[in-house]
Length: 59
Image (cartoon, rainbow, N blue to C red):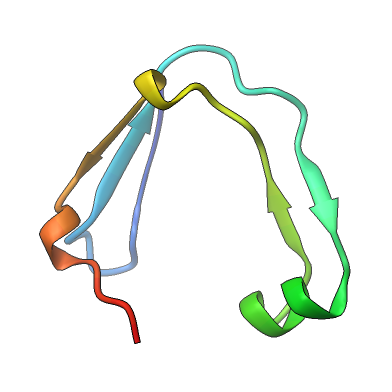
């Protein structure tokens, strides 16, 4: 089980199972979006549990 949260703890997530090796992207879009390069991995949707989704906002 892998767990994480936002800095204030209002949104929490957990992933069950094995995580695949990460991918890293250094393109201009990813660097503008994150402020740095982006690193991610793929997981099945059913392996992800998100708590506090009502606290997520889009700007």
